[in-house]
Image 1: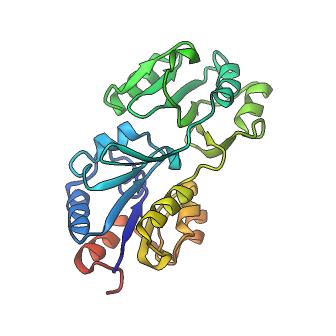
Image 2: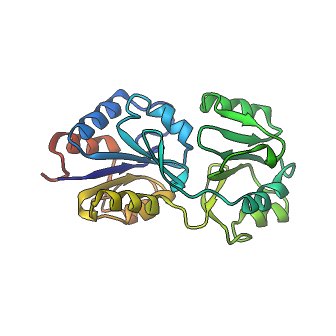
Amino acid sequence: MLKLVACDVDGTLLPHGHTQISDEIVGLIKEITDKKIIFAVASGRPYHNLKWLFEKVEDRIFFIPSDGAMILHNEKILYKKAIQPFAMVNTVKPLIGRDSLSVVLAGKYISYVMSEDKEFKDKLRHDNRNHIIEVSRLDEIEEDVYKISVYGSAKSAFSRQIMSGRHSDMLDLIYEDNGWTEFVAKGVNKALALKYVMKSLKAPANEIVVIGDNINDVEMLKLTGNSRAVAGHPEAERAAGSIVENAEEILRIIARKGDLNG
């Protein structure tokens, strides 16, 4: 019997091009949690965005937002590793006003945006249901920041150096694709957060299922032979126990049997 199912969101529970979690996925999460199996969503998205996406089942699931920087259940923070203010200032301040880059800083319920691009800001507000505050200075942010996301291409050598991730021993470059370059505190990733959940549940690797699709899912896919990669990214496919066309087919088996093979 499984104890834990952990799923990535974008490209996994939320197919590319979709903006809302389907009723089918919501129903499967309810069926799985009715079997006393813990369900966790592990995503690069901030908590406030995941909370909105999964509002129909938010009281049933564990949230691992910002690529593993937090773990929450029923609004309670079980674990967190925020970015140190010094590291945030040293990374963000030199980028502001350079190369038309936009910066988004993820808090718990709010993300903070520093950008001159009105179209970018409008889209960000829409996608995050207005859980966005525009700031011009970093000292306007009075809460922990769990992720730094930079949107745009660095044109100057100085900006490229900063965005390479090699300038700081306090941050890890966690994601780089589709115009985004994203940083978290050193040592943060989905796998380490998931290990924390596994330990608290006393769930061994053979009693968990992990489903993901991208480079930031690789380490958690390696945690168990029961991992499944949604086809598309070669590194995720190599890390997983097997490859599937979509997450729904695996969740349907678990909802029906309480296991992958039972």
